[in-house]
Image 1 (cartoon, rainbow, N blue to C red):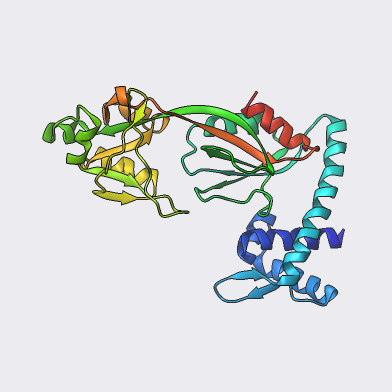
Image 2 (tube, rainbow, N blue to C red):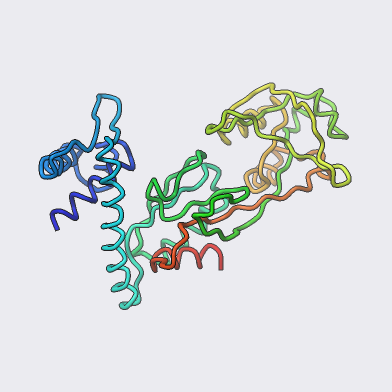
Length: 290
């Protein structure tokens, strides 16, 4: 059992690249994590991590050992899952990556936790493209197309993008009538953190998408910033309908060019493709995508 604990500590440090973060996940101090890693390195006779004051990175030996450790922990977890399945109560830690814009799923996640209190939800909210397998996630939720043959995907809820601005903004600026009118407006754009590219604004006219040079009056990479700037009358923003529904209902924002906003996107739940799906993950999949 000491070896299993050491493997678990090592994997958490490898995934988080931090003794402090690994300690928080495991409920122990960073010094306890460091001592566990040091004991493991002494037992193996190799250095598993390069340590500095700013970062913790795997050595070549650490990369190899990480694959073995994950395999060992997966086998142990599978055995535990089989026993829990026999007892009829899925349990264990479920590590899920979600986009920062996850307002649509928060109520479902809360209901899932209430329905399965023995499952520990470890939720990581970020917009970067994570490697589910390499980073040890059980599943991820992402929008857009799925292009990884290593993964199984199930489509979740869909959403429509809308163009919104505040009543104050449109009292000062002419309401756009056609997509080309946007070139004369202040536009609040989103930059993808993982690529640095600006988000495209898809507006259709007779099933043909307009190819416009949208002004980048303000560029930011969070939903909160775009909503705030938009509500304060600084320009027009391109946002998911579910993210602005409450603001529209309360009159803080209004939509424009609705007839041109016909494109729909979908979220997908992705998990590693394999014959065996642990009970805790199976009930999560069935709960979110029945």
